[in-house]
Length: 67
View 1 (cartoon, rainbow, N blue to C red):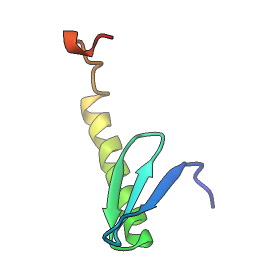
View 2: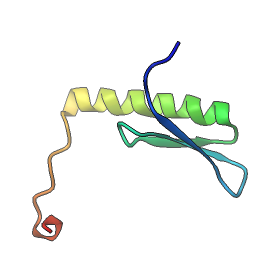
View 3: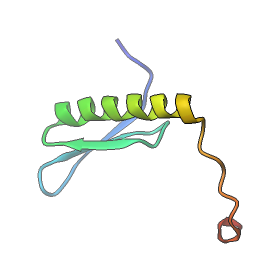
C-alpha cells in the first residue's frame, strides 16, 4: 500500500542509512534501511504532532534572510 510519500534513502560511508521525507524535509537514520524508514516514520509523526500543537513555524523575518 503506497502512501504517496517521496522518500530518499542514502547509504552513508559508515554503513548507516539516512532517510529523508522530501515533502516535509524531516530526516532520520538507522543502521539498516528498515530501521531508517521506521525512525523516519516516528520523526514525521512527532513533527506533525508538534505542528498541531504549536502551529507551523513562522517565516523568518530577520534582515539577513532577505535576498
